[in-house]
Length: 178
Image 1 (cartoon, helix red, strand yellow):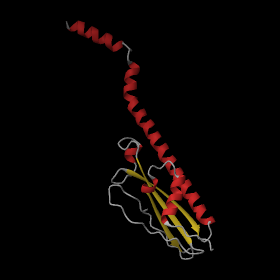
Image 2 (cartoon, rainbow, N blue to C red; image 1 turned 45 degrees about the vertical axis):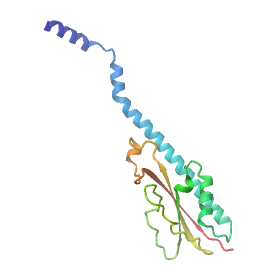
Image 3 (spheres, one colour; image 1 turned 180 degrees about the vertical axis):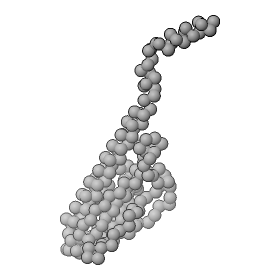
């Protein structure tokens, strides 16, 4: 009886049927996570590129409209009109505009003020439209949800308490005189 079992086990060990199945079962999860992470990175990069484009177009509009100081809502709408891939842009976008003296440079803080759906809504942040010939720094923060927050890149990237990723873009311009 033992001889028969040993013979069947030896024959089973020599067979190569299903060899690719075992390799597939071992490697598939890694490739699957890699593909999902690639999609996640691609979408985040696309949203960031549209945020940058929206900010650049809005700042260009501000520079060309000589003497008209933009208000918070108008500037937000200008950016959101161009940042089409950011869902609920008006609710998820936070603007911060600060006047900076180029002759006595003091950098703005590293921490961008962003929205957080898990917290209470905050009022408008520092937003000083500026006077003629002043250097203005405009920082925009948009919150986007992670596509796959529990695996791959989506698991490793920094998120807030509601699970959103902060996309921050900064631009500078000089307020032209009227």
